[in-house]
Image (tube, rainbow, N blue to C red; front, top):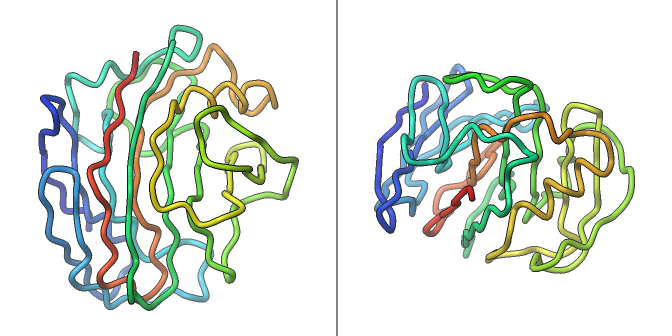
Length: 218
């Protein structure tokens, strides 16, 4: 199941979602604006490639939920900047999880979608037991984004994995989009459709806190 709630932060609309994907177990969270804390998570998909859940906040038009003031979808060539910020904490949290942005792109300016044509992911934290799809194709330093990022891709997913654990990021997402275009994974004719930030959880995760996600497409 994927319980969702429309919220507003700084006059802009977002959606907070549980996005529990596993067929068994439960997921629960409390929220205020785009900040949320995991209060229950009983699934264990540790042996699976896909996580049990992706509790997150997003802006865009996804699975019948629309943030009407998001300026999305937007053609990549028309985007000048995407200022975004997010912080998170895991003090004392046990389990198998990551902390990631998942950014969706489509080939056409379609409206509501449930799956994209391409993913751009930012891994602020990667657990030792899990890795992005594909293989390492290089590294990147993106202006305004903390440190060096290892780049993974399988042609559909392009993932930027921080070489250190990043608990707070305030940056221009356009820098990563431009890098992905330069590597041929995205193209300027594609459309940015949705921007998510949250936790992919395979097991545990109670106490994970995501703080005040924002993203504005200009």
